[in-house]
Amino acid sequence: MDHLYCLKNAATASPLSSWNSNSYLRTFSSSDRVRLFHHGLSCNNSFVHLLSTGTTTTVSLRSRMKSEEEAALLVAKGSGSTARGRRLLKIREERRKRENDRKNNYPAWAKVLEDACKDDVELRAVLGDSIGNPELMRKRVEERARTKGREFRKSKTGSVLAFKVSFRDFNPFDSYIWFELYGVPSDRDVDLIGSVIQAWYVMGRLGAFNSSNLQLTNLSIDHNPTYDDEKGAKVMPSSFHDISDVEFQDNWGRIWVDLGTCDLFAVDVLLNCLTALSSEYLGIQQVVFGGRRMGDWEEGMTNPEYGYKYFRI
Image (cartoon, rainbow, N blue to C red; front, side, top):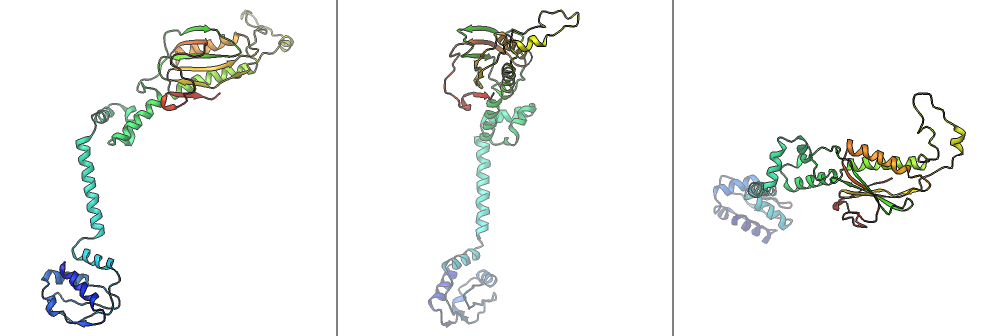
């Protein structure tokens, strides 16, 4: 390659002259002459013609090479190294390094998850195309656990035990109603409980919880009952005034209510709904009417990463 640099320097030193390169080119090896013959030396409005047989012609040089980049490109071509070749070499080296790191530094827990996927269809669906990428696998599992609960591999079933009901200075016009579940609710559980509360509130707003008009409650079903529509129309209406969204922090949930002119009959209806919900779909440990703080509830904590979930009424 020193020959190439010398040839380039000679060309730039005497741009307007002609010189005979017979004696100089004899210093090139036969392989160098073949290489120069195939690649050539491109100049602006001039040429160098070198024969692979070792014979030479007069070299006519009429201008300098355009830039140092052209000379560098010529050197790269003459040496058999190109930019594309260097890039491919770098890519192969990085790939080899990643494969080596994967074999030597692959976490044991990631290998356990991969093995578990062979026999667990649900876990395989959770991980998806993240298998082989420990960081992505960890994010997929954390996201699934956050949205479906810590025991995401266990199916949700109801509880055979009845939940406990207690009252703590319950004010029907300004109180919280608390729910303690057996575990962290999944998104499905939150939607289920929220839908029940929402339906309960809508019925209350429409005056459903009015014990002053229970005409059919104590009638026998052995005969065709009658209903006095005039009496029903004259009864003072009752209406649910206000309710908050359903909020959850871990396994504790709550709603704030103002029952307005509804009777406590509304509380009986809610408990009847929650009883079936707990036994058929998800387990409820207890329901508490009243009280400002239950469990480890933290006011103002609304970050989903810390277990907060909600259902908008």
